[in-house]
Image (cartoon, rainbow, N blue to C red):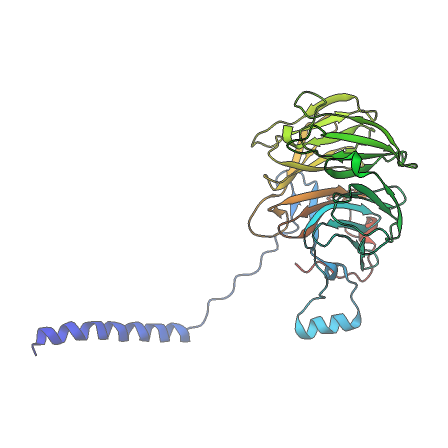
Length: 376
C-alpha cells in the first residue's frame, strides 16, 4: 500500500483523536463563574419610563393557588418541592368578584368555581339541584354578593347567594335567541340581559327586567350598524355615572346609553391600532369610572376614560403562557379595591393586577393570612 494512501487514512484519525482530547480537557476545566441573578423588580404597566399604573400580582390556575399553608403542607413542600395540588379551570369564561371571593364560570364543567382567597377555600356552585347549571356563560354579583348566572342552554338567569345556595330563577326560553350575559345595576332595581342573537336572527338586543319580580320592563336595540343598533352584543357594564357601556362586537365598538336605553355615543372602530378593536369581548368598569375592554385578537385589555378616550393597555398575544400573556382572553372584572382580574381560556387562568399605589396587603385580596403565594 502506498504512503499516500496511508496518509489519507491517518489524517482523519489524528483529527478525531485531537478533538476527543480537546473535549476531555474542556470537561476538566473549571466552569466560568455564574452570572449574578438580576432582580428586575415587579412587572408593571405601562413599562418604564412611563409612570406605572398597575403591577402584576398573581395568577390563579386552580384551587391549589389559593390554599392556606399549614405545617404539613410546608413540610411536604420542603421535602418534595411540590406545591399544593387542587382542581383547575377547564374552560373559564366570565368572572365576578365580591370582597375577595372570585367567581369564574366554567362552561365545560357546567359550574361556577369560587376561589375565596381570604379564607383559602374553593367550592363550586350549580353542580346539583336545585339550581343545577347547564351552560353558564356571563355572570355578575350584586351589592350583597348574590351571584347572577346567565345559563345559555336554559335561557334563564339563575341566582345564588354568595355561598352557593340557590335562590331563584329569572327568565323564559321564549325571551331569548341566545342568552349571553347578565349585569346587575348597582342601584339594585334592574337586571340587564344580553341577547346576542345569531346569524339568522334580528334579536340582537338588551332586555331589562325588574330585579325583584323578574318581570320584563323594556327592551332596546335591534340588529344593524346604525347608532343604537347591535351586531352580536357581548357584554354590558354600568359605569360610575350610571350610563350603560355595551360591547357591540360585530360593529367593533362600545356604545353608551343612559339607563333607560337612550343612545348617547359610541367609541372605537375596527383596526389594528391601540384604541381600535379587532375582536372585543367583555367589559368592566373601575371605581373611578374608567372602562376596560378585552380583545381576543389583540390578546390584551384596553383602558378608556368614561368618554372613550384611550388611556393604556395591558397584555399581549402570545403562544407561551406567562404574566399578561394571552391567547384567548375572555372575562374581565375590576373589584372594589381596583384590582383587575383577566381570564384567559387557552391558558385556563386568571391573572390579577393591582393598582400600583395599592399595597400588596391592602384590600380584600390582601386579607389572606397564611395564604400560599402564587407558585407559577
